[in-house]
Image 1 (cartoon, rainbow, N blue to C red):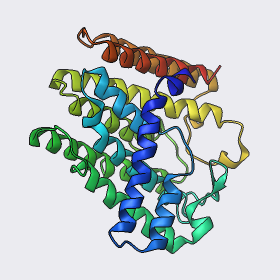
Image 2: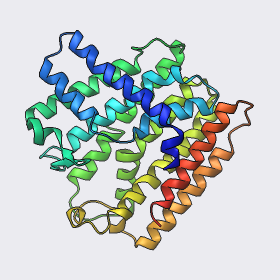
Image 3: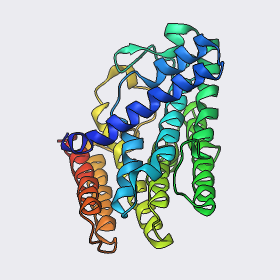
Image 4: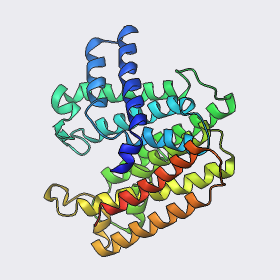
Length: 293
């Protein structure tokens, strides 16, 4: 994807900072094996989609990327915790993630639970401001509130609850709820925290919130389409439980068009880096949609 190439410097920055997180835990006297397990979970690949989105959103509103680093690290740690717990035998019971053994498959279920708990707590430590930046107390508080809501029962926990506890009887309301909260909420959170770090106005933050909601739901709809022929996912909640592939593609197109329309509503800015980041956000929407073709 060109978006991945265009934002490679952001991913490299995030990778360096994530590695530093676990080096610091060892220096703090955290048990060596716990550090190893958390570092394994965070280092099994992936495009760093959410932290890169956070940094891109910050730059898109004219902010300094360095001011969004705490939020970017926090969202990646939180996302990794959700993956560790999603993979557990009591949840999705997955043995592989990105071609490697999941944390519980490699280290044991008890260790995986504790590693996930540790990652979540570390995430809050970073969003509270571990690295030095120029955020005001008001901006920091706004980020923490955004982060806590996305992480909690009104966010990813609520989405996972519905995904795990509902057996059959799929409805459009249920699928919408899970897509919104299990998937889109962390994408929204990453984007909004980046915009806050960039000093965006309330109006701009809310425009980007709407953009990220549509981006996130489209992301999950497209994943459902791509997983439609996978026998291992035949019993999982999916948009294809309630509509055809053609209808799902049309929905993904509609959401993507609306996301781009919201990007176009952002006030003009005479800043080359900001313009580049806005173009990259548009590219992300367009490339994501092409995965269904």
